Image 1 (cartoon, one colour):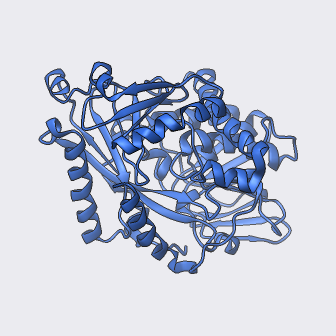
Image 2 (cartoon, rainbow, N blue to C red; image 1 turned 90 degrees about the horizontal axis):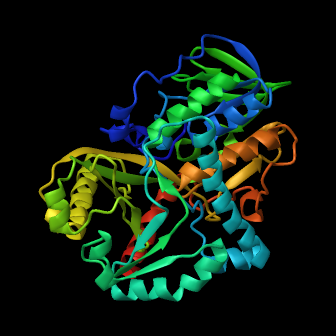
Image 3 (cartoon, rainbow, N blue to C red; image 1 turned 45 degrees about the vertical axis):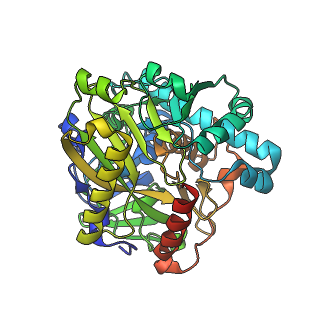
Length: 439
């Protein structure tokens, strides 16, 4: 494999809390040479959703995951099943795709949440769901002013009623801290991503999909059929779906080279926080929340009263960089929740999200590669959008009209980033600029 980070970035890095909440949900390795109608590379939300929907349609599908079940971002994220998937602004989306294209993207965000909710209900997945939508926290008076100014536009864009919370009302809603107001969007919910992933896997297997872990694809080529080489043997397939996102390799296939940019994200989870400490901080809400910085923090009090807090990761995965980001995330946590600065952090880990040059996801056929499809680039919001993309890919690979519209923002094959394998260098100035804008 050809990857652009140090090996440690592909981890898994650190003790992930979610891993302690599931057991016995791994899948066997590919037992040897096989053939399948459709091969899926990647066992996260995109890959499992694709496999599930294909199997339900009676298609023979085999999924290959390089690590264990839940190894990548789908088993290591913050558990926000919410709107998102793009980092492009409304102005950018309108400029590139027009007003209708922008409206179509906003509808797809809502559809993605609905797809995940439908699967959870249909398959009885116990995923520790909580939170009534998501709450955006203003970190400064200017930030709150932006929330207020955008209120009507967001309400119209998503066709729902939003709730604004003034600074003096924050404590009464259990949102106490050095904050200046909030905006709640009643769309989405929080969940345990590993339990959700395990539920999707069981549903896919019950429908007839074959899932293999510990089966990395080391080479991908096409003769009369697609050939996927693994340490255990070759899997041949009529069609292939790439669902590796930020954990992709530059040469699987060569087309992927520089068309995606992995970015590290870091998370800590505390021991359960007592009601006394919740009162001392003024934070007792179980809403999933994030602040509206460019370099945002995302956080939530979970059902067992542990607190999850996440933010961007380091620019490298060296021990020195990881030590620095560990100090940074704890310092930011203490600054935002000072009453909890001495609460024990029980788990700390990192993982990779995927950014595209267009700042929008991609779902579709890979140009000049007959029978090859890809879904990727969720910009840190892949729980809902990855699930939805998998459903769309299952239809596309069968030549069917997708059961939900694919907005133009997702149809264009991703262009390459500048600097090729050195494109990580783009992150340092971007982070520096964002940091200045967040002041």
